[in-house]
Length: 281
Image (tube, rainbow, N blue to C red; front, side):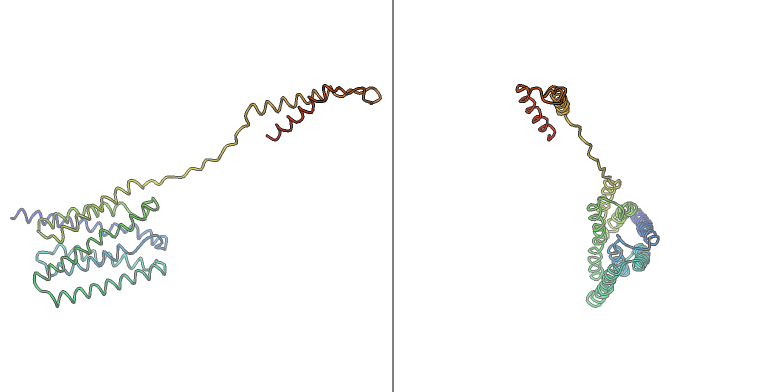
């Protein structure tokens, strides 16, 4: 029993440490936002959902036994996600700000409704189970939220908006929290992290596939040379025409025509027609 508790505490502690790294993973992204002074291309949906999930898990941990590790990590996650959203709102466009404010209002209203209903309609272990199911559903939403980014990666064939560090630490965190929930016999912690592990693997595979975007090379068409037989015909036609001009007709010293060779006139006309046809080709 003591060994069982030791392993459970060890996985919970590792889960806390790795989850802290997950929370810190978006910092390069927000540093980039601050540098560019714009949030264009980034979405606030994953951070708003993560904030809501942290609030729910804190509420669940308060009524659960031996859940100090859940309280510590979700407290840290709450403050980090709140900070990310504040920075996002500062640099977001008017349209993105409006969407984010709507999501935050949903957070406040939804969390308040859950608190009121569970406090007044449930008690004891029943309250823990109801909150556990609610937390599990929204934890799945946290893991599914990055699929918006996955869709963008597939469409654009670029991993610019999907940091590898976030996907990697998300996968490790899912593994640690799964074993923690399994050893603690807490299905509400263990089950969501199975999907978390699978989604993390998918994101890392997409990163490997699209990390080097393909460059489109434009090949300029080359001028094609004329076939040799056409060139030869043109040369031959010019040579024949020059010989005909030399032979027909002959003039005397006074510049008058001496004779017209009928036999040479007809081939000359045919050669001229052939020459004209060749030039058209």
